Image (cartoon, rainbow, N blue to C red; front, side, top):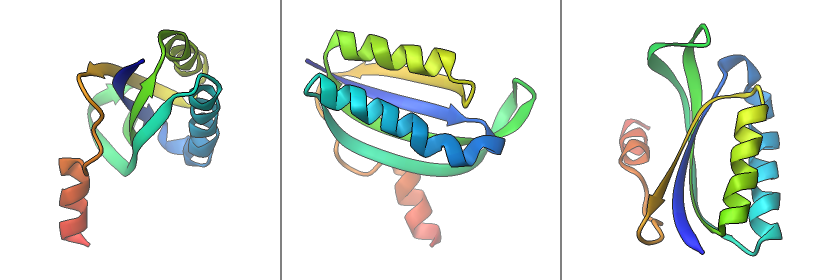
Length: 110
C-alpha cells in the first residue's frame, strides 16, 4: 500500500454534504484495510479564480495509506459527485501526521 495526500474542494452551497463524501471515502479505505493518518477541515476559502462559477470553496485535507484499487474507487467518487468541484491526489513517501501549516496558521488566529 502507498501513502497519498488528498485535497478536496467542496462547493460552497453544499457544506452539509461534506460528511457524506468523507464517509464514502472512509468506507472505501476500511474496505481495503487502509489507514487514515490525517484529516483536516480548512473551512471556506476564497478561490484565486472562479471554478464552475464558484468564488469560494470548502477545503478538506486527508493523508491516507491505501491500495491502488481503493484509490481508483475514491477517484470515481470525486469525479461523479457534484459536491466536489476539484480534487488533487498526490503520492507521498511516508505517512504525514503532523498539523499542516494552514491549520497552524488558523490556530494562531483563534
